[in-house]
Length: 348
Ligand SMILES: Nc1nc2c([nH]c(=O)n2[C@@H]2O[C@H](COP(=O)(O)OP(=O)(O)OP(=O)(O)O)[C@@H](O)[C@H]2O)c(=O)[nH]1
Image (cartoon, rainbow, N blue to C red; front, side):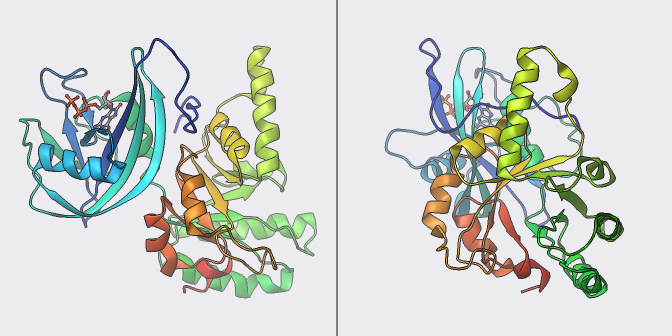
């Protein structure tokens, strides 16, 4: 998978005086069998013939979900009954800047039809799409929607815990977890034992078709044995500076795009900017609730989580005292999914 160019910040419209700024709501209309609905832009519109997610411009006074409900009625003749905000992403076209509020649409009344004469296609988001060119700003959400909805973070601790912990991991993988982060901060394992533990975790993940990222606290060389890297916020900021400096000096050696996944832990706007500069695939934002990892520190709560997630411009996993049972609540607050140590391991 080639890494796309870093995207614009979503925090605020870009101050480009000569380009109109457009706010758009677009829906990832997802069927129960996992298929995603794409629509072809009709004759007479800019980019006619190109494929996109159904949706359109947000009118004054509308929320993105309201605009989407109206647009999907007009374009597809369906009544949306369940939709949640997802990723808000800004893309600069040659003549316009478009801020797209992508939303997941999972329930509706009626059968989608091309009510404006446009062609429709149900596609498998996990497979390449043979239907034709997609609008440039539609490519990122089609990549992001392939991410699993749960992200399990390791906490093995000691070597003697490893066999029992791997059993629990096997249980979580059997229950559908497909993304894991190897992160052993408070461990008594020496480097050789830790490296061997990583290899066992990666092998178990691969046996279940899951991917494993290595936290940036561990040696960079280990990442190549896994499926990518998960940066701590401080490491992401440092890496972003290195990338910018090497770009400025035309030294590509530090800016080579990797092929693995990139995750970043974020707390604030500066961390999110670093994540976008690194072309991260997703971020992890927390902690939502008080957790044993941060005893005594109150969580930010779902409303604050939603406010911050809306500025990420990337899929956001919520973390902090959460389990699979919180997935619905997380999605109502703009999360892509949930991340966790204990909550996802125990299968709660
Ligand atoms: N609906 C939708 N629009 C997208 C996507 N990707 C993307 O760049 N856009 C851009 O977002 C803008 C949506 O405008 P639109 O012309 O479809 O809006 P609309 O349905 O309200 O049309 P209208 O202005 O003719 O009434 C266009 O500039 C379009 O190029 C996408 O996946 N779905």
